[in-house]
Image (tube, rainbow, N blue to C red; front, top):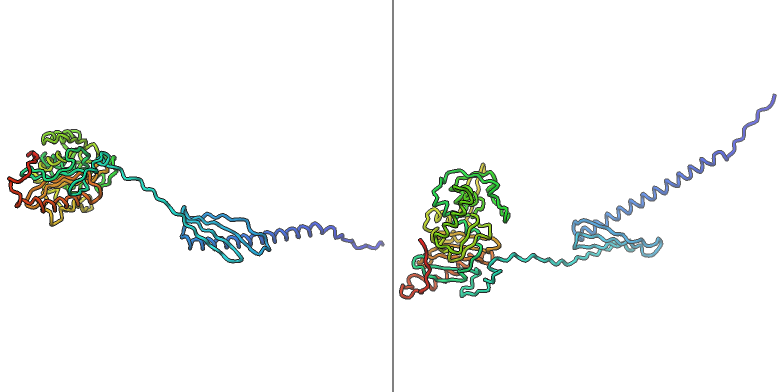
Length: 394
């Protein structure tokens, strides 16, 4: 019987497995060290960004990194640039374990678009001087009873008149004696597509004609004025024709209307013509009352809307105003017409193309003080009055 010998196992059989395990351990160690390094770098970047945000405020961040210094060098330096929008740049530097932040703000030069010039400015009318130093390039002051011209400046110039147009619109609607309680609905046709002006009278709102007339004359409501012209018997085209016919009848030779609101710069007139219109409007009790109303509330659906006058002189105790209307578009400048009693005299005042938001009001105040000082009725006998007169129709 033969003896069974033990089998010898060669170590060479386990060598591939050992190699595989070794390679796997090395790869794991490399990946772990890389992940830890990435985590540290991410934490450092977050800390640096936080420092930059404190210095420059919460802004969008763009980071640029420079190459790191070799390991073992005395200066471990890394630069980052954080851009905060267009005007702020923060440089972040790591040096010897310290974080250095430098914030630089760039100066900004703002170039404003020049304001659009009015027709009067383009024509050089603002170069005309006057004793009262008015800001309006066109002005006219007339005694309504005697027709005496107390003050005039470029009164023949024909310029856009903006919402002074609504004085003619209101006069014609009043004279037409249409039902004031008839409901008129604001439509898309009444929305301003020329100037893009806003209105609280939304499309679909329905108000009585009398209330629309009130808002047009007192608050210069564009959609109200357009709706009044649109619903005039015969339609808008007929209404514009009637506007021009009325102007001709009043002797307004330099006046032209193309629509009822004044948003178009093609609605044009002169100070002399507008004085005729103010005189005619003063003879209408409805226009007098509504144009000098200080405020008014209207119900639109389930809302109550408060409207106010565009002329603050209406509420002033220093003024006794019989009729008034303001106007503004960039082509016309600030405009104002009034009939007012000053120093015992009934005056018609016209101010066109005034430069500055409150300048037309200031011009009216200058004229009032000047009339009170130099043209009071108690010291102006007929024999000593100026021979310059102006014919007022009506």
